[in-house]
Amino acid sequence: MSELWVEKHRPQSVTEIRGQPAVVQRLTIYAEKKEFPHLLFAGPPGTGKTTAAMALTKDVFGPDFRQNLLEMNASDERKLESIRTKVKQFARTSPYGGASFKIIFLDEADALTNDAQGALRRIMEQYAETCRFILSCNYSSKIIEPIQSRCAVFRFRPLSDSDVASQVHYVAKEEKVTLSDDAAEALTRISQGDLRRALTALQVAAAISMDVTRELIYETSATAPPESLHQYLMSCKDDGFHSARRRLRELLDKYGLAGTDFVNQLHRELYTADFLSEDAKLDLTEWMAEVDYRLVEGGGEQIQLDALTARIVTHLSK
Image 1 (cartoon, one colour):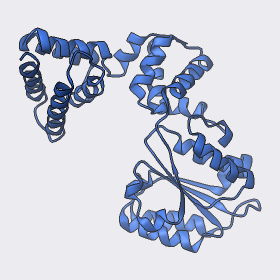
Image 2 (cartoon, one colour; image 1 turned 90 degrees about the vertical axis):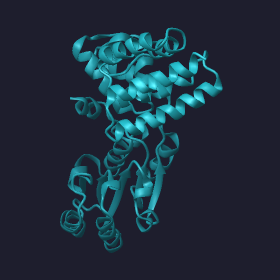
Image 3 (cartoon, rainbow, N blue to C red; image 1 turned 90 degrees about the horizontal axis):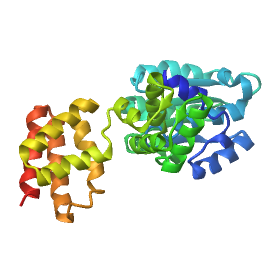
Image 4 (tube, rainbow, N blue to C red; image 1 turned 45 degrees about the horizontal axis):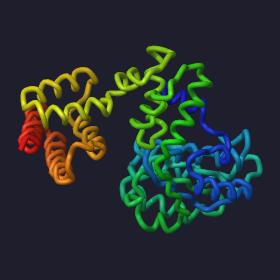
């Protein structure tokens, strides 16, 4: 359902895109000229890469854009055979309706194998006159250099808090959802610049109640509010191991947190804890990194989090 919300409120033109002014400025020129080179969109998830590709395609081709567009998710079709058959077959056919070129949009292109990227490189050379490629990826370093050198590279940045807040208020108004200011602030906090995550959290909360509050956002998004994490640290500092451990279990149970979720959220809030010294923050960061690694590698969740709590209590109670 979240994809339906995203699609429903997706900009239909490059000029409607918000939060990426440098990208929009360059893409607007391409949209006006209806001509552009191969493009590479790189940046974190939920920052508008797919939206920008679709909006540019609509600006160039108009209502019949689907006739001249091949849209593929490279993480689903990442093998050499998909590039050699599906992509090559589409690239070699003539554009529809008198258009001068067709567009092939490869989403999550960094999932392509090196062999598939090598084949893609050759197709980009052969059909450059009648076909334009738009590649989107989270990590441009995973795209081979020969492909990068053939593309105009666009760097998408995480959206600012004000842009996320503005958009969630807009969507809430359009969907007739009552959204308080502190609930919008909570959405902004948990999104970390990813608008798709913010809209997904808003939709999950709105499915329970059309009157979305801050508490509902945190309860339905598997995210602990910052004050709860600060209280856990204060308990480690003042109340001893058993009290801190009880507060940790309450946090995990109430908000449905996995061990890695808790460590990552605690790390984000660590630097806003004014009652901790700089040395303490440095030590805690190092310990959290170690515990996170152990959890990812399959360590027991309860014993690892208890060990983290024990080290924090030992250090802060000195």
